Structure formats: C-alpha cells, structure tokens
Image (tube, rainbow, N blue to C red; front, side, top):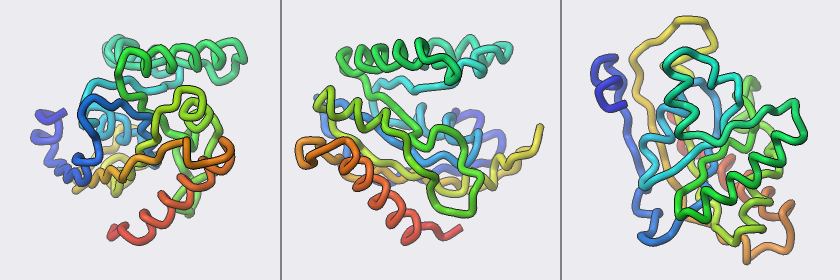
Length: 193
C-alpha cells in the first residue's frame, strides 16, 4: 500500500498508534465511508490483524485471492455463515491478532458522521474480554467516491483512539452506545474535510 499511495499521490497521516499496547490485541472498529477504507485501515493497523469482509469481495480476480487470506469472510444473507464468521473472529483473537471490524456493516451513504452500529463487534468484545479500540478514517471518500473506476489523489487521515474495556459496561448495548457516541463526537470535532 505504501507503493500504491506513493504512485497515486495519496498521502496518509496516522495519529494515535501509541494506543496499541505491546502484548495486547484488540477489536479495532472503524467508520466506513469508502471502498478505500479497507486498504487504508488493515495494512496500517499496528500489528498482525484480520478483517471481516463480505464474501462477494473474494470473487474479484487477483484481489480476491489476497483478500481471502487476510479476512474472515461472511455471506450476510446466510445465518449459518454469520455464525461461522463469529467463531472465526474469536479464533483470530485467540491467536493474538487484532480483529478489524466496520460496525456500520456497509459504507455510510448518509449525510451523518456514522450509521447505526450492529452488535457483532461489541458482543465479540464482551464474550472475549478484549477491548474495543475505536478508529476514524477521514477523507477516504474524496480519494475513492462511489463512482466506478474513479480515483483521485487525496490526503487521508487515520486516527486511533484509546481502547475501551468491556468490563466497564453492564451490557453489549451500553458498550455499543458508548463507542458510537465517542466516535461520532470525535469525528465531528476533528473532521476538517
């Protein structure tokens, strides 16, 4: 990705890497505005990691082969696939890797900073005891908007916030609400694009 960014004139500024502590692995949750978010987030997450990804992405020639190796694939239309992906995400955490998740479920096509979050990442945090590490991506939509075969150079920012332990919350819902509010407020305060 470093080479790709250099050749395309894309600049990436990362803030908050110090929030990743040695010998700890996290459930890293990102906002999701563009197809550029996965190439920005996963390679630049400090430490080994996997991401949750829809199975359709694995069908793209060449890219799909790479995608399968670094992802937990899920067919969102299949209840069985969703259950299996949850088990595989637990295995990723048990191996000591970070699990990267986009709790909005799909790209945000609204004019709001975030869409409603799904429960998966937060239930995974409660079940595993692993902290949630919120992360926000700024300006990825400018680089790769919702147009086919359209890309333009842009400055993208990736901000990692402090981890949040599930032990401080009475329920999955309360943890989810807290992370949503934290990320929304941070986005509104720091989005200069």
